[in-house]
Length: 261
Figure: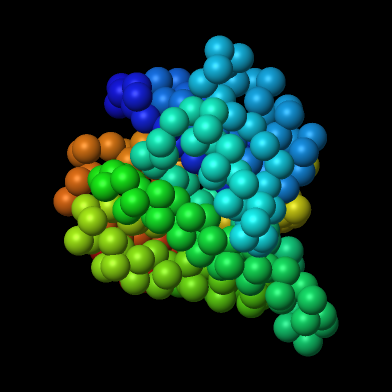
């Protein structure tokens, strides 16, 4: 198991789902973890499921707001120590066709998924550069960054934006030896309150996963721990697909021509 003792890890959108899975994974690996979420009740619930030994900092956080992000980072460092790893996970994914979409919904997705990632990474990177910390920054995109779907124009566009932001930030921070990478999850099973995905959509998508199952938050947590570890020191500006092979091709198609004999 990877050891993150003496590390301070920041995770946004950590109240439930993938974000909580990532926070839990780092905590179990020995790290001190700062968890933030826009929903106070979710933060409180998540904190109650993690150690109460002073290794967890939990606070309400709006990643769209610079002041909120700065307060969160400062509070985390005051409570836990200098930041070494930052995971920009917070994101939303409503579904509305383009012809029916209000501009406010488009803006809300872009502000949360893209602006929120920018503000989180900027705040973390500034702390790392200031101290000369050779840290790790990890963003969360989605398989949707390269595969569109009906009703998700804003989400797909935002996740493509996260990928390109990650690549540019990796270039800019390479001289500081700060790794910046992105994880693109496939279909992940999360708590009911967090998932607006219909059963029909889930069943259809699951049928095309070569590994034969839907992903779990732990699968994303494991990938995050790897990218934050010394094992990934020579990896930066990359996108790690974690989807059970669903991006490899269409696994549920039959042979294109019948076999002979």
